[in-house]
Length: 280
Image 1: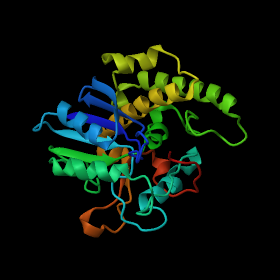
Image 2: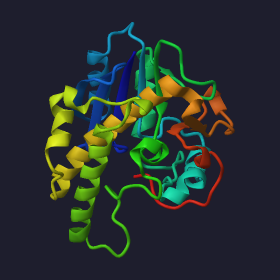
Image 3: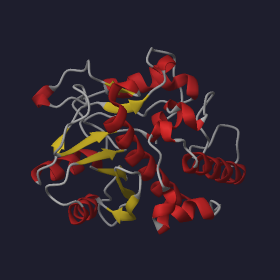
């Protein structure tokens, strides 16, 4: 079984604008990183996946981007539930609907399904074999995997807090990002450990300090979030509902597709709570 993590740039560019980078990682069942890279745009991302995943290999892609969007206004149910259940840890989601400008995730799902991938909403549990893709959200793994130790709130490795200047935040996010990487690098075997040392790109995350310059930092962060997406897929496949919950299963499914997010969760995150924060 192979696990793919994609931190997808929600906008696929347009006009003369070049799409932002997308982090992409492939991990095997032992937690070794086989591929770690950056793509640009949905087409390039699909090509990257297809060139690296043998057609008959069981694979699970977890994408940090909305894959199914049925609602015409407001939030998707799964996004509302993120705020309800993870808000105490300063985690919630932006609103996505059919009127949103940036829906590259929907295009990614559509292109992959034409190539034989199946969208799995997770409501019946982890898929058994085949080539599947689901939606995830790295922050839920960060605060939902108890072994990482974020018992009070998420790390501030992105999204500048109110009252903090840009220069102050660059120092904060670099420190918080490095600490998050350190914790992932030392995750115990009870939580599907990743071997970040198994690939040069992910090994560099553990050896180099986070840069302060915005573009260089975003480059590093995109790869880190892709790693967390792949790790979430491993946890889901290994532990299912024992360590994860599926948000949005109670939403209606026009056209047969239900918008869901597979999210690692502690016991206290499986009941509603008032939320705050943001997804992107």
